[in-house]
Every structure is written in C-alpha cells, then in structure tokens.
Length: 112
Image (tube, helix red, strand yellow):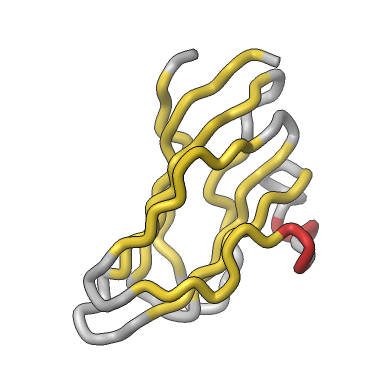
C-alpha cells in the first residue's frame, strides 16, 4: 500500500472540481483537507463520491452521492475528513461557495 498525494485544487465559488480519481485497479483510502484561506469569511463546502473518471465525474453528481453538504469552515480554518474510501472507478467531486478555498487529498492505495 504505497502512500500518495491524490490531488490538490484551488476552488472557485460555485464550480464543481474533481479532487481525485481512484487509479484503475486500485481502491484508495483518502484524507481530505479543505482550507479556508479567507481571513474574515466563513465558507461552506460540498463533497461527493461518484462513479466516473476525470472527464465524466462532474456530470455524474447527484444529491445521493453527497459526503458533505454545506459543511462550514471558519475564517482561516480547516475541515478534514479522514478514511474516505474511494473505490476503483470512482472520484471525489468538491465545491465551495467562496473563492480562496483549497483542498488536498492524500492517503493509501490498495490493488483490488
């Protein structure tokens, strides 16, 4: 099980982004850290686990896929979700209601 950085993105308000896609033939266990880089504003983030790859995942998002919905993050604060299992053929899609929010996914892969 090699450790890996699966993805990192800067978010734009209201725009879905793919944070990570499990590598073909592998299941991933990821820690996800959102960072609110705004010093005076609370922000909200969303995270979805969807079947798909880098090009199809965003169009596959449905409310039933939600892992986080409007989760608040205080000014200059973080939100971390640990132990998120991202199966082979799946992706994490994220969104923020504000600019100046970043996210990183890191963890382990296991051949399936």
